[in-house]
Image (cartoon, rainbow, N blue to C red; front, top):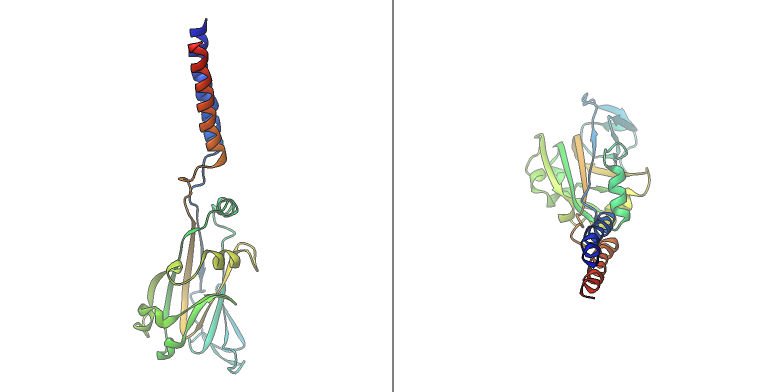
Length: 225
């Protein structure tokens, strides 16, 4: 009879442990992407503001308010990286709330530098962290040419906190961005990915291991008795 109890207890032990392990399954990284594009017409107008697809173009602060816009000269381009339609947005938010940091933040531009004064340009989070364009050789060396290039924002001084703070301010689940002031902007794509923290045991996982050890030890003790 004792032998029967011993063998019967093994599958129970496995089931209880497995349930605890699955309940504590750790978070894997989640990727979301937002894209901003122009409307494809590339028109130039005289005015105060020009809406070119997702890009809002205005004269630089201090320049005449009624000026030529869309030519990529002395103007500020603003837009939002809107993640609200990203398929895995809810998983991304759950990861961040559970403590996952960003594993990558990759920003791909398709644009044309239009002026040798591109060396005075900057791009970044509106009212937040930015990059000086001289730090991006591909841009400085490509005046009058359409180029596509990708920046790893975490390697350019942007931090997990600065990006996620921007993500949670203004329009929900969006990051407001800008480029100032000497390019024609065709498209911009921002991809964020949470880190994979699956190697870190969660409390329920540890509970599962303790359950296996405790039940197993008790079963062996009963068998010896």
